Amino acid sequence: MRHALLIEDNVLLQSAIRQFLESIGYSTSCASSREEAITLVNLDFDVIVFDYVDSGEVSPRQFIQSLRSSSDNKATPIIVITGYTHLTEDLDVDAVLHKPFDVSVLETCLRRIMSTRSKP
Image (tube, rainbow, N blue to C red):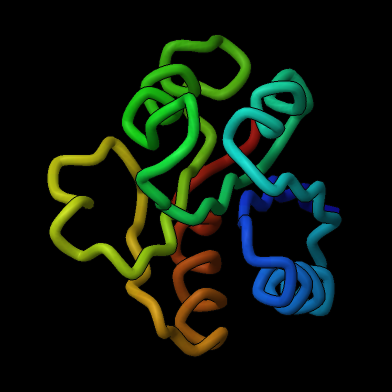
């Protein structure tokens, strides 16, 4: 079973995305903030999905940089979901989904990313 890290501060949206991920075969670890997620990043994830909210102590760009610089998550696919279309340019991520989005778009994105990656 694939393992996803989901970072979403909206409890209802986090629950809906988690349920969807689990319905397509992902076990899911959830965090409500990037700060909370940092405590989980040493776990083995197949994908990281996070809400790009420009608040908190760790900026989204700093969070992505820390993931990409860690040996554990250097190659882990990152999918950003956001309502801020203008803030997502030049991000070192595998995909950006703009809110609102249909879960079928997330599923297509996950299938595309996972089909091009082989887990070591």
